[in-house]
Image (cartoon, rainbow, N blue to C red; front, side, top):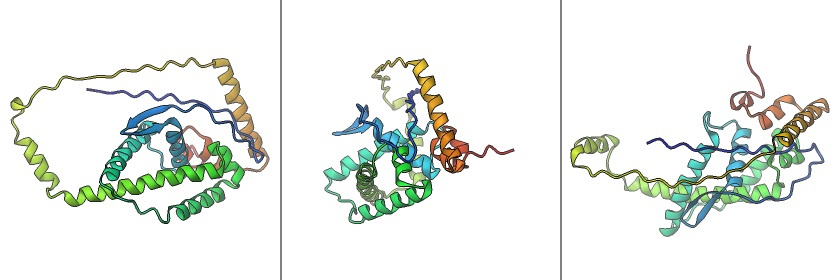
Length: 232
């Protein structure tokens, strides 16, 4: 059974330079619900941009892979809270402060970083602290699970090979289908892309590094990792 996930990429209008204004908060979208926790479109976008800046985006379907990672993390966090497992969260704030300071140094200024994420540094810090806190819970749960495992991968493989396939029950496929239809204004989208490109060009002419802007804004994952280099 093959499952296909369609990811709709919403193109954002171009942000301004050093005098960037953070756009008003828009309605968010729920991509998945694990237990009582929702995974929002903004969660995926934030991690996508962070991984893009660090050059760590998956080569294929990056947003789908990020959603998968978040779903697995939410499952571990939910179980960790049920088992009263606490993550090591004492130094998370200091760690996030160092990370943000490093990102600001990488892109050149606080204003550019806020323009890139389309949120203030304070908002970004709060979201990163929440994400890192969840990671600490997930890591605590993962450690507990691994300590309880007493079998080797080879023993697991041998066990399943020993099962008579004809004795296994047949479970029919089950599906839950949803459709979200959004008709874009194609003419407006073209105008926004042109404005975005012209704004990036202006910033380069004004002295910002092409390599930095290519890393931040290029939609070509491979060349973005190289600062826009395409090779010979």
